[in-house]
Image (cartoon, rainbow, N blue to C red; front, side, top):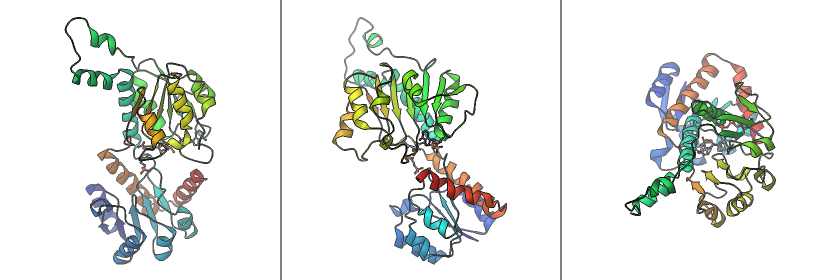
Length: 333
Ligand SMILES: NC(=O)c1ccc[n+]([C@@H]2O[C@H](COP(=O)([O-])OP(=O)(O)OC[C@H]3O[C@@H](n4cnc5c(N)ncnc54)[C@H](O)[C@@H]3O)[C@@H](O)[C@H]2O)c1
Ligand SMILES: O=C(O)[C@H](O)COP(=O)(O)O
């Protein structure tokens, strides 16, 4: 069996596949400079006569899938396999697997880092120091940049999947109180309280968004929810900007109705004028969509995908196929 891998893939994970399945052809898109387009992908599949394709960002469109009927498996090393025509694959009876939790640890670590950075006024303190503002005498820095501790705070998650739960487990040691709104998830731990959406906004010190984009979640976080937040609460979004009405967030920031916001995602990437208004706000800590960007993510996705290949081809667990395609399509709708 031939496996064509165009995703970045850990060398040892490739070796495992080679030993288990026979042949691995590694043509990662990254050194190529950009994701492979339809034509290039069809060319690669025909040249290698691959049975399985493991991709990351390449464009696995309807045309690619229909042009190469010998494909038996599509693996997408991403949290959201938006570059693959899952509907066409399903029609052609091709299982599509992705790697949902590949960046959960990366995002959770960045959440903790950025929340503490924000609460301790670290960035303003660094700028003040570099600006050579420190004068002899009183404890000016100590007074000016005194912050708050994360310990004892209530964190409210909107969406409690891989990332929300990873954060909850990570901050247990501070300790923090965890509450969440997610109609599709039961609490995995008696310490984590499932509450209403309104309750998350009204009683959390930190409201953190971990929703996928669906017709239901688009624009779900609006003025009425943000207006419930406590004046010293912080709003965090590392998920997708589309789930928040940005005018409502900007309005709350400009009128000091919340303490601030920590944002990794924007309506427009690169940002437009309104996004920059939010980014430049003095009570906003903004990062350029890098919460999930670690070197280790590429190792995590390789091992998650190897497990899927083994489950499908070796253990012949056919239920997995139904799950994979159906789950992806369900989130999309
Ligand atoms: N900034 C980054 O670099 C980065 C990295 C990874 C993931 N993300 C984004 O983070 C988000 C969450 O990722 P994840 O891995 O935790 O996903 P996940 O699928 O594991 O969790 C999402 C959760 O949202 C819940 N949900 C769905 N619809 C809902 C609704 N209407 N109301 C409430 N809850 C709902 C689901 O039940 C699920 O538990 C995604 O949008 C993803 O794209 C961003
Ligand atoms: O925002 C995201 O979801 C991350 O940047 C990565 O997404 P992906 O795993 O779907 O590529």
